[in-house]
Image 1 (cartoon, rainbow, N blue to C red):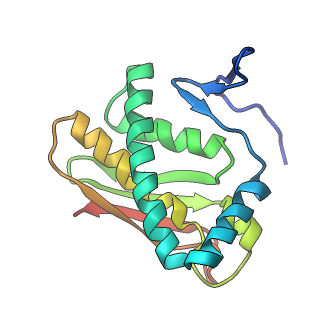
Image 2 (tube, rainbow, N blue to C red):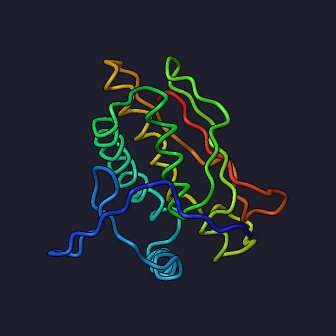
Length: 176
């Protein structure tokens, strides 16, 4: 395993302790801490209900992130989505690769390798990285709205690396 510092600026405010990357405040927590909280909530609510809640929250958060980052870096369109995939990959969630992106049609396919959730859950024969699903629709919709498009999308996880027969996860985004 090669090690390298991610290509993203991290600033720590000496007065408040707030970490900032680009235009947004950040939190830095161990993977096991986050995933164990995720598992605890899933056990109480069930994966389907928790996935619904996370979809809405993730959608809203991705919209906000893309809006702020586009403004911070002076980027638009596909460059915003590419930047988003790069940054979430650099933050340890997994490696996200855009397989297809068509903003005019409101579609995308995103491959996920090395999901942080799969590392903890293992092969459990179900989708475990559903937290990311709303992120993709929120990001695409923010980009479309910034371009003046009325198209809105929905995202779904097709399969997960945690399922037998799959060595990666796959998400698709399509118009509602």
